[in-house]
Amino acid sequence: MPGNSFGKAFKMTTFGESHGKGMGTVIDGCPSKIALSEEDFVKEMARRRPGRTAFDTPRSETDRVEILSGVFEGLTTGAPIALLIRNHDVESKPYEPLRELFRPGHADYTYFKKYGHFDFRGGGRSSARETAARVAAGVIARKVLGHLEIQIMAFTLELGGIRAATIDPDVINTNPFYCPDVNAVDQMRDVISKAGDEGDSIGGIVEVRVFGCPAGFGEPVFDKLSADLAKAVMSVGAVKGMEIGAGFGAARLRGSQNNDQITPDGFRTNHAGGILGGISNGDDIVLRVAVKPIPSIMKAQETIDRNGRPAMLKLKGRFDISAVPRMVPVLEAMVAMVLADHYLRTRCHDAG
Image (cartoon, rainbow, N blue to C red; front, side, top):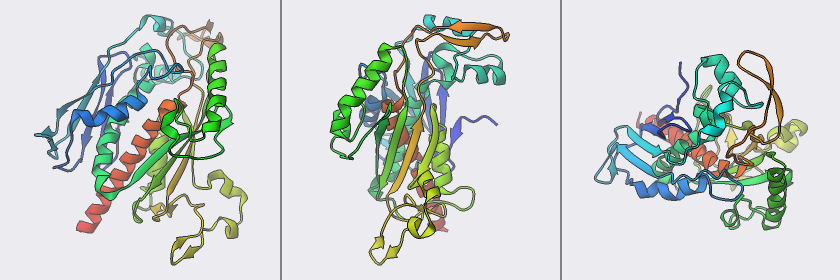
């Protein structure tokens, strides 16, 4: 079955290619009577859009969201909501070598093996451009969650080996990396600038925190909140891993160290990352996401053509030096969609 949809009670389907006419999404399951306008998307789309900083691809897109259906007189109707984000600044010529050659580390090779024919321009369907539709969908998911006062905050914990030593929420949106440590910003700027000068790319780690999520979100056994969060996060291009709470560190602890002891006032610690048995426990949900370096680099690399013959590839074009900063609003959106989905499913339980 095609894998272009995500969610059950709150379902998102995305469509479009990087160098096609546009990207878009259809949201099904959004309740009626929620205020929604095209202006609601401006802030979040601006956080993700290309050309935002000197370290992003210079591709310049307005990323204006058009509402095509599902909203009448400023309120959602309960019908599917279709959103369109038109592509304007498209330069396909630099991608012409990819008609025959595969980028090492990229999905070009696997898309060719699976489909035989695909849109290679700008990565086509596998491009990070697809995440624009996810961010738009995330705006609606936050609207669904609005009255619950759930807050979702993501930030760059590590970039190119430089790690934030302190977490100050007030600092996150004051720098191009969404870094919460003012003292790490200049170091991150240096390391990403050096990689760009060398025609290379870097990866990093994004942390996502959810505050105010009630206990009880999640469906045992296969639709655990943790499982759906993992699928949501791992479905984003360039993501190679995710941990919750203590994560892999829990493997090195004893039960007496890892268990979050419970008091009348709540949990003493949060090694569980806010989820027990796949169900939210009312504590903060904490995720850390590993993001690989972008495969599209300016260095010469060995590869093969579509007939399996050896070749060398040195790309010319417009690429991000790192996917990490622009990943921050994308991951917030994906987490919001999972929470909206489970909120609506929990509401169905309550109604029953």
